[in-house]
Image 1 (tube, rainbow, N blue to C red):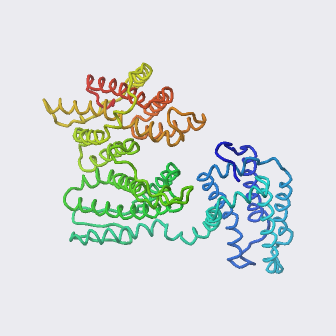
Image 2: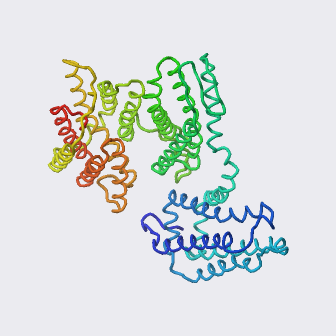
Image 3: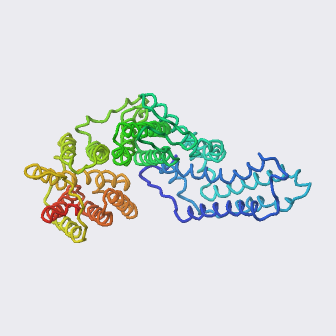
Amino acid sequence: MFATAQTNPRPRIRPLIFAAALLAMQLLAIGLVFKHGINFYCLDYWPAAACGGASRALAGIYCAAAAIGLFALLRRNLFADLLSDTGRDLRPLALNALGFALTFVPVLFLRETAEARSMVLPSFAFWVGGMALMLAGLALYLAPAARWGRFLRAAGPALPVAAIAGMLTPPLAMKLQPIWHLDTVADITFRAVVAIVGGFGYPITPEPETKILWGENFAISIAPVCSGVEGIALVTLFVTLYLWLFRAEIRFPHALILYPLGILASAILNVVRIAVLMMIGLEGQPELAAGGFHSHAGWIMFTLIALGIIGVARNIPWLRKDYGTVTADAAPRQFVAPPPLRHDPQAARILPFAVFMLTAVVVPAITQSPAMFYPARVLLLAAAVALFWPFIRSLDWRISPLALAVGAAVGIGWVMVPVEPAEVAPYGALTGGALVLWYLFRGIGTVLLVPLVEELFFRDYLESRIRGSAPDQPAPLWRVLVAALITAALFAALHDRWVEALIAGLAFSWVTRRSGRISDAILAHAVANLIVFAVAAITGNLAII
């Protein structure tokens, strides 16, 4: 049997790094010698399938190794037990060296002569046999044969499927390459936009060659960069990050369906975005179409897709690990539904921030003066916070001198950096009581709501997910540092003054780790924002915020 959780096996890191580096160098050497080190042009003597197969074999091994690495992230305990004795027996490295030497035997007879045509089978025999011995020796260096047997039985069919999928990636990518050609994607997008806009009765003149759609007083160009590939890449990255963060809850390989669903949704919504942009311009609003809507509609679509992916993953039982599993007494365990939304701690950390971000991209998309509508954003955010008030009230609220001091230091440091005032006041032409009311809402949002929402998401949720433990639980130092840096960097990306925001994010993370209470980070953030808002209101320079 494999070691239990109590033994807590750990792989030996240095021998593992050595094995990975050795394999990479051997594959690199093989590729360099046979591609550039001998005077033999394969296509002049061998069939194209043989030349392509030999070239893609090395890439396939690399991809298979990457796929196995991904599998290792999902089944870390399984691999930790397998690799707990790595490097203790050096004899398999002799087998690895023998296989490595055999792969170079074809160098002796691959010459640009007539006899080269008859050397296809012997060359592949040495390559396949040598590669098999090389990989077998490295595998036995990582773990003895008996341990490999137990490991493969415990891993089941998922591991060979992952390895085969990795091996098939290079040839499959070559087959699918035309699909990902930007001109092809742009052409599909262009035709769909023409169909939608024309279907609504707008007089348009399409130019398929240049991908320009002309109207009476407005035109758009659907260049390859506007084809939706960027959105597809963002969605793919988001799904990958989500699957990694929630790997303990999500059922594999079922959850991989989120990739095609997200990509399809991204492509469809991009077509809708461009069609709506065109129709806004044709309706006599070219500035709104080319300005706010064009700049922010893409982020609106991405936010909707991200929320949709989360909703699908959380609410479809088939995608969750706790659906259809079997307990010790062989009785099937029914799907355990998440708690009601109002009492769901995870939703309390995520949903208010999602509302905050959604309003940040929707408002600029529908108006040229988004700051004037800040009170509406505050009301929506307050409603989201109120929905989860039972959870927020249950936090360990204290007046922490450390949090007060750190917040004051962050706030003072923020306002000490000079910032040029904006040319136009964000509140527009508001005066009198309306202006006072605007400042009141701005203060409530800046000092009370934003610190609460951002800290619950960045420090309490995202950082703990990346770190792999709660704020009050120990974790390896490297994971603590990586989690703090990643979340601080993402936090800084939301701010124009990203350097100051990065420092602030790290400070709030330190406060959280120091006390083990997210409420201290919220308090520090609120104190910092209070100082910043007070200085901005007194000086009239709201660009400081």
